[in-house]
Length: 85
Ligand SMILES: [Zn+2]
Image 1 (tube, rainbow, N blue to C red):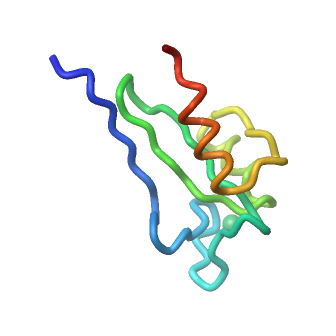
Image 2: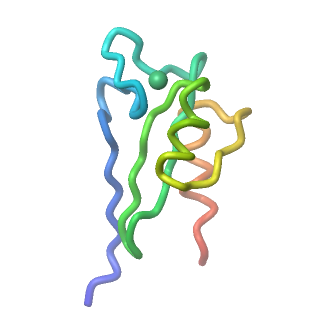
């Protein structure tokens, strides 16, 4: 059985917010962040969210609210490096 890990991103190019899905206001490091969460043992989903949308989204999907200080790309890197070895 392969132990390969899959990483999927919603709107990886357009960075549309996964909560409000406002195509006119893509998520940038200035107005939001990305959330990486594990849906299965080897499957991570990355979602871009506006800072004001994070809390609602996390409640909706029952995941911990990430640190707001992290910018979009910082969050992704930290999340990847914090995996258990
Ligand atoms: Zn939003």
